[in-house]
Image 1 (cartoon, one colour):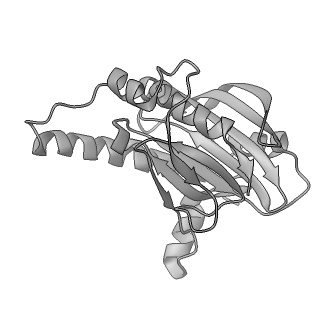
Image 2: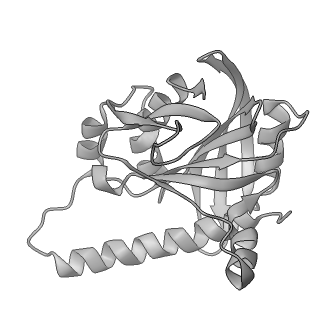
Length: 220
């Protein structure tokens, strides 16, 4: 188990996203960038508990990501499966970067097509006896730089889950931002949904998409 591995992965992804954004601005000076408020409106809310418009469901067999649960993703967001078993040196790298506590990255839903910079990531694990709160606490404990955790419980689609809001401080980027995650357990193993974002402003703009996923969550 790689403790803090997700932190390294997200740090690298964050830097790559910033670099990509800057490159995109240089290559497309005639294109007006989408503002955060416009992105939030397009997602169907303003980040204050509103729910985004649905762009389809993932999790079922044949969908972009096959998971132990199904849920709706926001309109214009793009889902892609994460393959952590490539073999050889690639597999060792995947183990180091894609595992966090008891779960491994399985799917990421990209907000960039909708105008935001961030991902809703899905992590899955092996079946066991741990409840959702225990899984979520282990997921958070495997992160360096976490503070001010606030846990709660929720119910959706016949599932009882745990949720956490917290602050994440990146030593690499020297900044602190809000993040959020939830966990549920299924007969096929635990599932964690995590919402980060380039910064707190982006995180809050993407909350309607997170709320949509949470409220439409069902066992597969």
